[in-house]
Image (cartoon, rainbow, N blue to C red; front, side, top):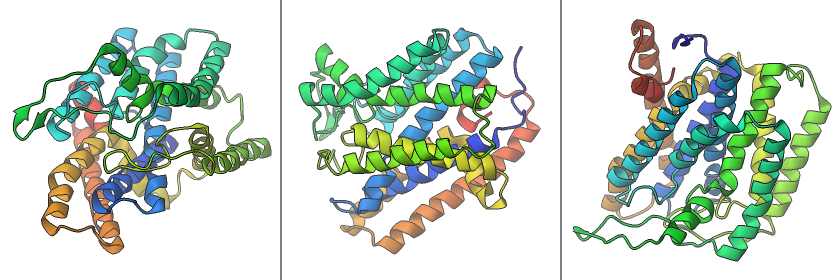
Length: 355
């Protein structure tokens, strides 16, 4: 059975994904607009978007797995597409060798490939796997090293191709520990998304009702994470990037999960609020808006910054970020019209513009 690509969308999930788009835009804007060290709010913004996108990738895979509407071959092809797209982004926009950086598309591709078969395993196995990933993350970082040097390798230097001198062990280290978004801990966030899928799909936790225990647990995660962040050593910078996710330790994990749980809970109750409609629109084509964000930063914002030889002031930062989001909203409205008129567009186009 092939699902109707224009079927009713999941409003709370679209809003949550749209929240990730907003965080992503303002995080990138901060990194490209301000001198180091970046304002502290910018350092926090950068930590949310990757977790939201990975968490939702796990959730969506669980929904499709439970409904048995697609074979594994579909997810294999989708994973391959994301791997290739991640490599293209590395080469065309960041001017680095592909498959080394672990930009956000790489862990999503890995999740797409691995979570589907993992869902067939006992739930206790997934719980244990999440705990192991999160607990081993700071241990691996301290024993194998987590460096301030950006994990990618430049493709060209002064117009000359740079020979790639990265061994297999270093490649593995970047994928699992030292990349921008390494599998430890970011694959764990995708696995957590599979539990959120079960909660919503089976109504084991009647999430539309008030549950004080859920709030207590979420606030506890938030507070413990905030406390641990005060003691964790932050990498000063990675290139021109800084933030609470460098390195992603237990404080970061708990803090982000606490915020994410509270916000997701609120959206289950208030998803139909008219005030959230713009955020919902942003969440309907998040992959496309990720590509747009990278292009805008590298091809427009960065050249403007270099031409002016100085950082943006805060009002310019806000105005530019809002302008980008308004452009995304207009694009999303156009895509809504386009989707209504298209009966069965190609699969790759659906992945870009949202189903």
